[in-house]
Length: 333
Image (tube, rainbow, N blue to C red; front, side):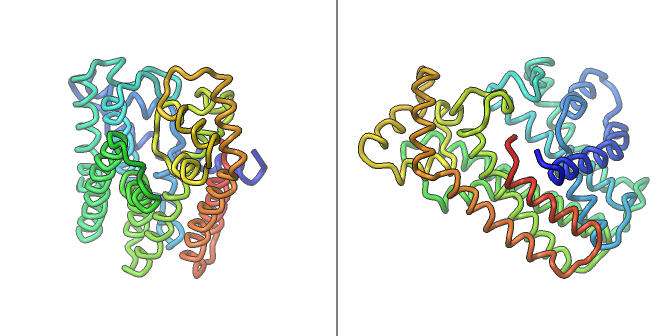
């Protein structure tokens, strides 16, 4: 990791510490096991990328951290709500190197912990003690509600793609990740702008930034799922191929491969019993197709769009948001 990328991540972590006390203060109550389950994933990792986007978007428009913290906390609660429920749907037992919420606390409490995070998010941005102007609060609720709807729609699209024998098109894939992943990035940036009590044009520009950052984030994430170093990702070589995940790198590999090469990839796709040695050959075959270069170019296209969307602003927050774009496209985890 280069100095710039490391510095960018350090800034995100520093900001994370500033909001964590507020975030966790909103998740106290009885029954204690329910609130413990709701706090569990928040206390065990995460880069707080989405809250960071809220804070920096607000700062970009000359808003304060005090104005942005309620929205930042709400976004992180919703993000963790999606993780808790995703892990239940996927039967995943580990996240961030620790047991998942439903594994540790049981599925019923896991479901309710997710529901609590969801409801607390909206309570946080509508609580009178936060001193959020009424119109700002209504706009925040509207923006976060739309993101939650999009996430649910995107999750079902993802499930449908996974069940179908048909390989989706690139366009269908992008539509799915726009809803499932990018929508919460859009909400984070837009809610930061709204918290600064700014105008609709600013909200729209930050939404464009968030949308394109989110798309790039996910397609790079999918690339790491194939080419990532197992020592860094903590996942086996070619994990997403083994699981039969219809991510963009895999879709493109199937599309561009010919003859024996294509047969090798298809035989490995969704094959949980494939050996490590065989998977290394499959990953090498995909590398020969230039998939990584293609994916990074696509990510760079979206990041250029994000970059242009905030070009009119000129302060340190813009530089932080621009640095984040470089971090996303070059990251290895």
